[in-house]
Image 1 (cartoon, rainbow, N blue to C red):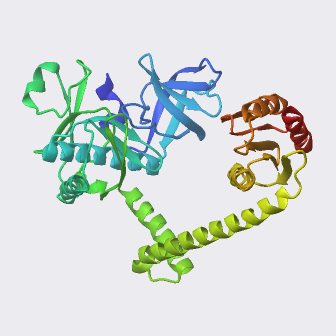
Image 2: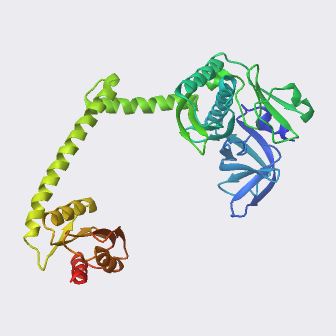
Length: 395
């Protein structure tokens, strides 16, 4: 029975002795053992599995398959009849803190706003719940976090109880149960009754603290990311390091970092605008010089490291300055070729025909209209060969 498993009898048990009742390999050839009882929690209900050792051999994962708890081990244990098991307690207690914190936060959202939790994920760095609502305001997040931490600070008992389906009417369950036999409830008196198969501390105070970090939209639901217990200190340490580094880089006090960043962004925006204006001025002079190189009404040029946006600006300047020219410009950008072709207002030749001749040569894609086209593709020919093919199409 589930209730007789060691991790349910005592969630604080760190080591145990058990008999091996099965040693085999799964479909992928990974060795595993099944024991007559175990302290190792198998993955399930949003909570990751425990890790640790059996006779000093690493337990990499634990899962329940067909009613048996399989301990996936780094090496085969076929010769052992009895094992000494030790779980990674730091990992286990972290999971207990996060899982209990999830119960508390989910109950807080229900208590305050009637927002139900529909899924839960316990990750390596953060925990998340999905709320069955489309919007959650910052004020609602703050209120739920405050209530959750009040419940933690009150150090209420966290009780576990095995009940029958007929006894469920005695409890105000937060969500509908999916099991009808061996029902395990996790209860925080006068706050939350919830069916759960995970491991939890014995009191809310051991969750220590809870902090909501962020939210995101997930298919008309709101995902809330948060941390509990030791992870709160880890987040504080990381963010403090980042804030200190930013403060030093900006030569600003920590409480003035935001203002210094705003000032830096404004300066950067001004510099970008000035640089763009200077580049446009240079392109104007470059266009006038290129017009002097036209042959048979065609201006052609090859560049290295130019963006397609720069080619577009230059081509537009060329055909604006002289309505009787066609501009064919190609940029060689490492292993990629990009081109632009444009015609002046007095020219009737379709640039789409020029593009159609160029794209197959570079296995490329492009777009545009009869007056202006652009495209790009692989460097299957040289930039000069591509220009020449486009010029021949015009002629």
